[in-house]
Length: 186
Image 1 (cartoon, rainbow, N blue to C red):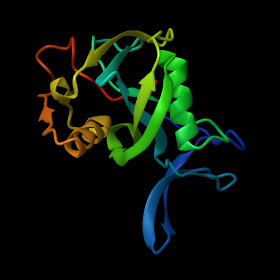
Image 2: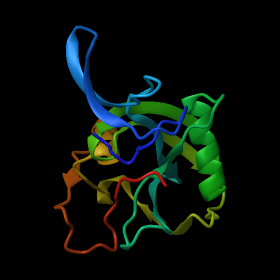
Image 3: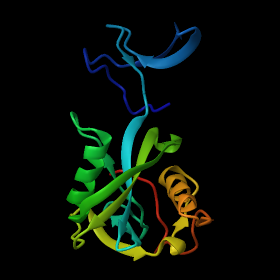
Image 4: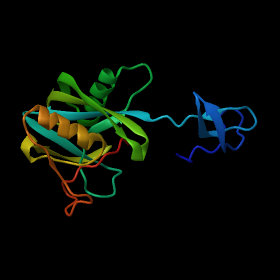
């Protein structure tokens, strides 16, 4: 359970880990003893895209990442948009590419970050111009991409299998962090 949510957003009272009966079972959650607010700590939906540009997969490195690792284009939905609108927006904002085709790959959990990742395959066109959020990118043939054993790496493996390519998985931590993708939506 995430404990970084410490105060009630309604009355500012410190939250306490308290057990209660919910939906036929006993659950411990952060609750406000003053106003009964409950922090549900539900997973956050994250959007991800396997961006295909001229038959190659685009992997990018986030400026905030401490290691030289590359991953899929990811981001959070904004209020009032569908997942499809959100991933199109994220791709345009982060790479300046135009999406010409979009198809759902799958939904995977990423429990380490308390996220649900909704991954799309996006065929794109244009010239890559990275936002300040991203510092470099790689374009790899699908056969060259190595998957990772979590979140978007599992979605990438599913996408490769749908194309008749048996995915190769990397060891973690990778011996060479110059081409190893990671999962994070920053």
